[in-house]
Length: 537
Image (tube, rainbow, N blue to C red):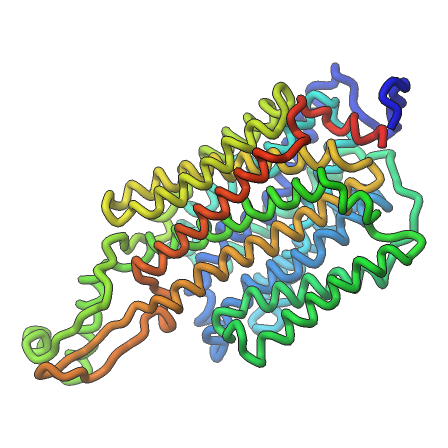
C-alpha cells in the first residue's frame, strides 16, 4: 500500500452525497428484505409446540424445523457472499428472496413433513441476504452513510424483535399456525417487488470463476459441524451417532485451507482471511455470537417455565385422574415435589415473553445498532465495541440475579443484551469493510456469518447441555417411599436454577473474552473509512 499515492475511486455505481432520498430508499427497502430471515426466529421457532401436532409421529424431531433453517442458512451464506462478488449483489438478493417466497408457499400448503422441511430449507436461503447487503451498501451508498447503515441493516426496524412476537401470538391465537407462513409469504413477496423496483444493481464485479470444489468442501464441513452442534445434546456429545459428524466436518474444513492455497482462483484469498485484522474481527464476532445464542435461547425458556406450584398441581391433577380419586384425596395420599424451587419461573405466554424481554432487547438494539455505526464513523468502531461487549458481560451477571429480583429483572437482562447485540452487529461489519478489499467483500462477510452461525449454535447447545446436566426432577412419594420420578428436562426442556447459573457464567466468559479482543485489537481505533482504506490494498 502506498500511503501518499492519490486515491482512485473504484467504479461501483455509488450515489452522490446529494441523492439523500434515493440513499434512504435503498437502506429502508434492503433492510425490510433482510428482516425476512430474522422474522423466522421470532415467529416460527416459538410456535413449534403448535406445529408438531399437524405432523403425527414427528415427536421430538420437530426441532428439525429450526435445525434445518440454521443448517442450510449456515452453508448458503458464504456461497451467496461469493456469488454476489461474481454476479451482482442485487441479483443475489432477488434470487434468495424468490426462494424465500417459494419456501413460504411450501410451508403453507405442505401437509407432509418432508415437504414442510424442504420449504424451511428454501426459506433459510434468505440468511445470506445480510452478508450480501454489506457489499451492496459498500458499493452504492455515499461513504458517510455506510457505517450507520450497517448498524441499521442488522438490527432492523423492530419487526423481528418487537412486532413479530406480538404478531405471532395474535395470529396463532385467532388462526392456525399456517397463518404465520401466510404472513411471511405476503411480506416476502412485497419486499421482493420493492427491491426489484427501487434498488439499483452495483457495477462492480470480480472477474473470476467460482471454485465449485472448494465451495463443496467448505459448505460440507460447515454443514456437518452444525449438525453435530444442533443434535449433540440429544444424541450425546460423545456418542457414536454424533462424533462422526464432528470428525468429518473438522476434516473437511481442515482440507479447505490447503485446497485454497493450491487452486488458481480460490473462493477466498487466504492472506486476506489470515490477516490479523480479519482474524480479530472474526474472533470478536464469534464470542459475541456465542453470548447472543445462549441469551436468546435461555431467557424465553426461563420466562416460559411454569412456577413450581403450577407443575406440582398439574401432576396432582394427573394422578387424581389416573387413580379416580378426588384432588384432596390425592394430595393427602401422595407427596409430589420438585428438586428445585424455580424461583426464576414466570410461566408466561409468547406475548408475555415479548412484554418482559423481547421489546426491551429489540428497542435497545434498534437504537444502539445505528448509534454504534455513527460513533464508529466519528471515533472508530473499537470504542463502541468495548461498550457492547461490556453490556453482554453485564447481561450474564444480570441473569445470575433474576431469582432474587423477580420477573421484571428479565427486562434489565434483555436491555443489556439489546445494547450488546446492536453494538456488536454494527461494529463487526464496519471493522471487516475496512480490513478487506472490494473483491473479497462478499465472501469475507459470508465467512464472518459462518463463524457467527457456529458460535450461535454453540451458545444454544450450551443451554441444552446445562439443562440436561442439571435436570428438573419431579418425584412422587406414597407412604414415604418413592413411587416414580419424572425427568422434566428431557420431557419438556425445563431447567433448574443451577442449569441457568451455568449458562449465565458462559455468557459472562464469552462477553469477557470479546472485551479482551476489543481491548487488544490494533485496528478500529481510527474513524471508520467505510471501505476507503481497504480499497488501496
